[in-house]
Length: 423
Image (cartoon, rainbow, N blue to C red):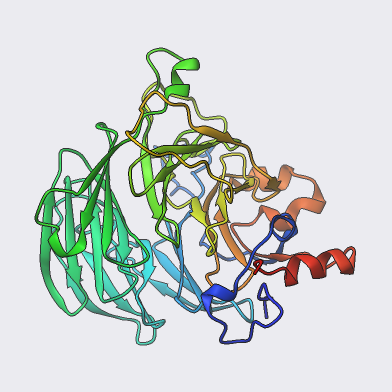
């Protein structure tokens, strides 16, 4: 079983018992690698028009989600499968197929036997699926274009979806009918805060983040945040636009993590909208390959699932186009008060560690809500796997469970694992 992070943590430990320190984060090592985490791309059909010399692009895992207790993780891939893994045993439990509809953005509901997911084929319906019975429980119809953001409310059976049809829809698992609709000027990204009382909607092209009261979502947002990074003008002028691909509140609700497809992520003050920090040191996932040509206009690419908080909100982890897993310590964020100054430079934070991960892009990174365990997913071409040194072959595969490395100085490890908050 993966270790919990405090001395008194038991099998049913509460989320608050997970206390992480920098030394523990730097000791994370791949403990379990899954060679069959995604079906390989089939070879091209022989024929007069097939290009036998070309290599089809490797399929990738596009999303993963832990259940509330951290006992299970589910992944979704471009092979139109979703796979369930047991985090305690480190074993794959089942492989389920959605060949008719495709599967993207898997999200556990508050039942560990059911998930929501977006569709990639047929239509743009959000589907509610029972992992236990392998059948669909409900269909949530209404979107007219691809769903690019899907989040479950942390406190009840509500959830939200954001689509390229420029709408946000609010739903309840108990009814197939949409209970709320927001029309926006561009495709939105959505997120709930930990209390479920507030949700945020990011709108690209306008660099705006709208904060709504859950009980009064039909009214105007109570806070509109403009995301502008004045340090970008030091690189090029006019500065390159920011393309937001994910939103995530800290567990205490004070901060808002804005994941972006470029080479930086941002932390905002969730109460007043101050830009507090810029996270640097990784390579953005707006491209699928490191050797792909960069463009002037940013795009989503394979970004959106690669950056997240640890459960205690002390650290942020991100995947990178070069396959590394980058970790930032964000325990000492600056405090800003008064009117928001869009010309004020954010604190630029460099990683405390870069973990050697996948040879190809690391596009999914999540930390277990209860155990000292991280799960990452990526992909690469077969010839790239074969060309790396033999000692690295295990980390060349598409999915890994990471645990703290227990080798080394026992006293130092004990300090990391048993350290608690001060009185």
